[in-house]
Length: 221
Image: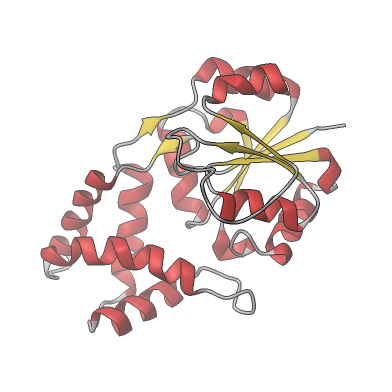
């Protein structure tokens, strides 16, 4: 019996729009760094995530800082990472992809969680900004629980919730993150293919459904 739903955040609950990275400029300017580095930093955050192996597992502020300094040939301080988290958490414009009526309905039937591949505290602030924090029990981040799709990370999240993989469903927009993470622990999954491109990955996986709109969750769960 399904009792718990674990959602991704970016491009699942909220749309992570690239034009909003202009907010990075304020952080760079306040720290007297070159504001034109904002796009390089935005791209490097994703590159750092990809570079983290299962052996390393955790997405950390120090790890991100070291990656930026090495690959951009800079000498940034940890204040840059803290500043970026603050911007992302509190000021980044975002479009909500799931209406509150649907979230409220799901929260009345299941315990809802978020498992994200960015710093958990910053992501919690984003949920709080849109008023959805009251529907989610907790936000899990890779700084404390490791990155999706690794099996060890997924098991840590399940252990923290206190449930088995048979009691959970993972919902997200990425086959090689959320869907693969679920498959790695024998969990069912739902792929949110909001733009018609998310199910085109060459990764061959089973035990997941595809939806185009998150309102469909009310009919299939």
